[in-house]
Image 1 (cartoon, each protein chain N blue to C red):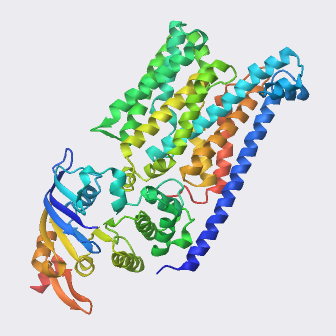
Image 2: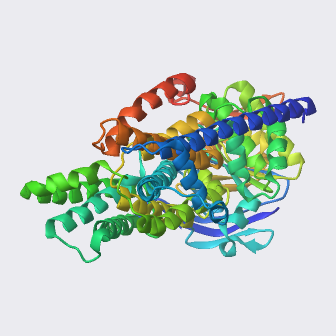
Image 3: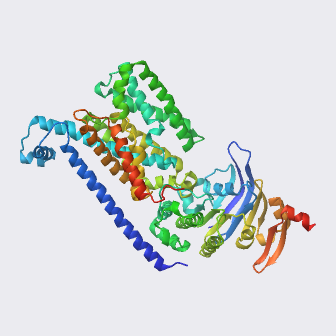
Length: 255
Length: 360
């Protein structure tokens, strides 16, 4: 499914924070990254996309249909969400979590089995969710989004706080889902993920778009410095170009 | 990427889990049935077992008339007017409090809440104490119950109205408003009780709960309310499961969060107010029974709602038997027994079954 956002404007009730003039489109079967410093509006943007937060003006269209006219259940059939903070329900098993996620899916047992297999969690399907490690919980939340069987998956920092193996597993799942035609939209803090794993991306700064497009073309030291208020250096690796922030105390020695 | 061996082993595990659940449910139903039978035979006056069996048969529609059995009218009155309504009341009130606790704990995502917290108990108490203090008798012997229900719903409505912020029901706000308003109303009740020593004695039984004197008309009015609310809560168990994950996540999976929350709160307020209006404040059941259910069946409300109903009903029935018989001919307030019996059972279960379920 194709997602189009035009001139989106959102402000938090009673607060000074707002998102302004956000426009982008995400093609079917691609990975879209949202980057920017803490508090730049990345997570709010994701929450506006599935209408947990109501936007003031602009439009969000999925395959041409404006989501304003859709009921929550209809939106959930098209958009799934992996939250940044893992919820902690009382005494729930892993399978219960996946069944909750498939609330809007007809014939949800099959969707749950498939999601468990794709994310490799079939073995601890009957374990208590609260007894899992932080990384395992995150993978389960990812599997829950897969069980929702929606064409678009929103991910709020899906790789943060994960060890290397879990991070690679999440990235493999993202690629697998992309190959099966899913559209993935994620908030990422890691610049290499934005650069190497995303087909297109938007960088936010104080609720405004800083740059938008193909990360290989748009990301450079200058734009990253603007986005994160830290200087960056560029270097080549076997996997492509990478950007590394220069800590201020090292910059003194460099000069 | 998909490993079929793993799917197969996961499916067999699932089948094993399902049969274990069936066994546990069967045990609970058998316990409920046995305690119901046992309760009919218990009471201050001895009624022979064959007489009780005859009375039970007589009451069965069509079959009763067929046998032409004769029993002593006094024994018939004891069983049908005193024992049976009490048993039915214990079953429905226990089930309602158990299910109410499950719903409130799920909505607020808080294991230490109970249905009384949204203003039900304080409102009902105020209603009853006002009736006693002002000597109101407009509804005859049902005045206390009707005032308890009306005041309970009135206080819950105030809590709801204060808690709705820009069209959304804020869980934390509702909880705090409920607690604050409860303290306020409790102060009024305390003042009324303090100013009239006679009221203290009359209100004492009501504050600790009692189901010994519930009448059939009271049951005819309240049972449909309690039953319908419990059935509706069970039908919408999926929404309740999703609400346990928080508003944000529930909305992302397609739940209409405000509607569902409002519906569950109204169902709980109605059913628990109906129960409290005829029984008084029976503590502990709404708080602990859902935990016992979760320890046995896990957290999904598909199992927790029916098992809370069964365990709550059985538990209150047993407590009522003890309250009736432990200090014969005196009848203890049931609230004393629920705490004394329930806490050791709960602690024992928690130590044996919890296995890290309550660790964070």
